[in-house]
Length: 147
Image (cartoon, rainbow, N blue to C red):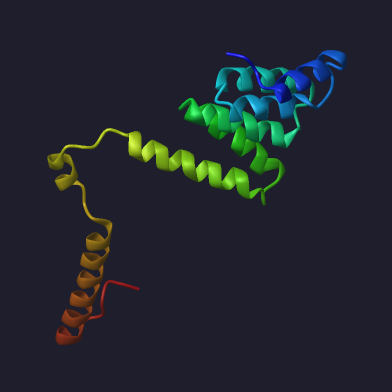
């Protein structure tokens, strides 16, 4: 497969200056072209020299996400959020990872689900118990055991 001219231009630029931050652009071009392995390889090489370059970490996370390497992708997005807590891209991508994990998780058998208590029903039952205790304490004149 022939590379696009933008990828070739960025490769030449990095060959001239291996410490250039243009690696992030090259990795993003690979990612957009669906060349996820190349995007990961370029990002990791560049991040070895520029570990705090957040946009490169976003590109790396996105490439890993497309490869269904969710744990590795989440690590990259979490790194970005630690450095920039208001980074909406990292927040969105982490939400996407969670959604993909839920979709790809094997469904539980119906019997297992039936045994699991419904949290809403459990809370309602607890409130009904409190109300019943209060009613009984009023009827007997004894204080409730509840604070």
